[in-house]
Length: 430
Image (cartoon, rainbow, N blue to C red; front, side):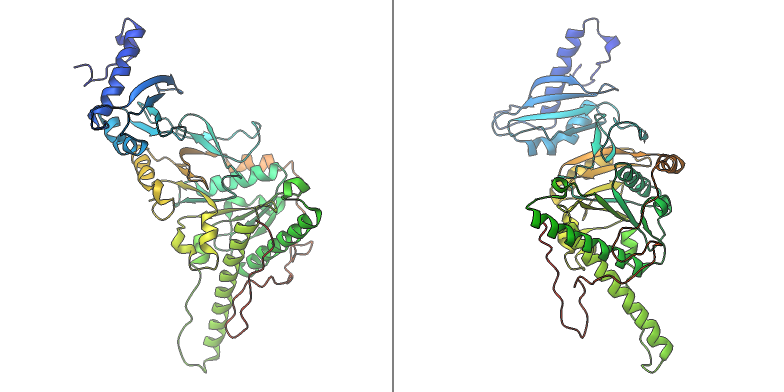
């Protein structure tokens, strides 16, 4: 009777020890009810249980009998939670082949919102995890980051906040959004380099300029026998490219018509220039993604929806995409975004979470998956905090002091019809 009801509220028991022992039995029986047992009928055995935050959440550590592994527990976890009446649970990365650490909560453990504190600590923090822990953008695990979310999910708010924190920590910040003009990054017009709506050619020149910096830094590091920008004390650079899915979707087909139509010919020539500019820029971003880490250059890509297939059409796109840690805000499908091995767990977590603005999942570059409530701050607060910083001086090759574009040295990253095929430059950065 007791095992089918789980009556473990503290006020219902006279003795805490008895309540705790009954809870232990209840958890063990839950796995058996879920079918998590070997051929001998042995299931996970509870080793310890520790409180983990508010709302009655805890971490239960189980030893696994021979013939039962972590994958079996992952398969049976939804049934275990349903039987035991817990709303949320997941097997933690600290689990091993013989032991499983399971975080369990009777309620959704994520906060409804998470406002950032600019005075608290350093680092590029993404938000708050299900155990109340702060989740950071770990640059060693995820050299670059993709923040995705449909309109209203909080994608641009998080990306703007990350870029602002980078600026506060002394990074050079460059913001590009030729599609919508990056309205959430208006502060970057004075505190960084900025490329707004309709400026497709300027976007290409900015990215090409960053490639020039990357090449120069690689040569400098090589000549000094150093392995990374950290050793050389080089300034970190964050290149933000917002609405990237809209940008690469701007490639258009040329209009068919009378070859003698001058107006049509000019229109098609403009379309071809834009298409080549977009393809070239995407290829250069791929070069930065795979080679810019040691040079202290990081990418922050914002998109409503960007999958591996979207990037495969560009040279180096597959390697580019795989270098990204990925934040998916909202209930959008993780298929084609997260690693295949994480899809089942990601979908299960999405079903167990309510989805207010700013909530979602984070998969780092090593495949670790976390649920999070992303940080946010009012736009006015971000601008006020950044007002203490001096206005940035243009320092990207190809731009003069007024921010005007000049044609920098080309880096041989374009494929041109009718011209000799050019080779992607290897800057020697791993």
